[in-house]
Image (cartoon, rainbow, N blue to C red; front, side, top):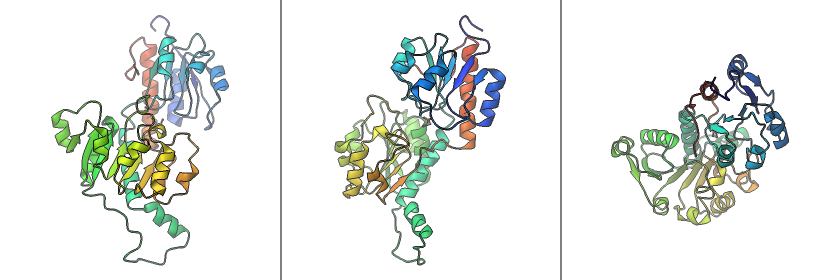
Length: 328
Ligand code: DGY
């Protein structure tokens, strides 16, 4: 091992992980695993980090500057189980000489699948139909009942054309949708052509054009509250909003008000600002599909996320740069 990097690193893992991941961690590292699905308190994480080389947290752990300040002297790596790192104060970590890694790529397809599931469920009203059937409130097929909106031929606006945004665009194309996208950087022309995607530098202008808006950017200081009341009002009243990224990117109160007031057709949400709390105003609405942050929840994806965490730790312990180091 390189100077300062332990041969058999001591890990503190905050949550129960897939069995295969845990078995590999036990084989390879001095791993303190967690046999529970509830998040730990900040005090419990601080205690766990006290004599660890590596912290393995998930999206539910708020690794803020105050907590990082309590890390033990050995802690040199935060190997996140998940791709989003908005819950980790990167500046504080880097300032304390702690590297951060994540798990990009392996949950792209699953999250894109879930995005399409939300688009279809919301526009075709599968939740409404299933709730009626289960309530015994189905009298049989009727020409005018349970009509939704066709997805083919519609304009899908994507905010954030990274890995997941691109995978959503590919699927949308197969469903016959037109793809518009807003991203800091424009894709190469060949990539745009392959996806049939049109770049919109001006987000506000794109919002006025879309039938469906789907969010795929990370949560950062710039994207927090991006879809506020003003921008939500730019969407046409027949538009649907889909969010599989992070809840804080959309102002939930303004979204619920727009939906209740008929200023938006519907929404499909897999993420919320204060998980696991879902605002009552959203729960009260019929035209909303609500999922409990399950975009990456496949056996295959979660196992691959575990493998990525392990690779990052091994490469780091060998004194090399881990493949998924998060820099900014
Ligand atoms: C991710 O990987 O960011 C998912 O949202 C779960 O954390």
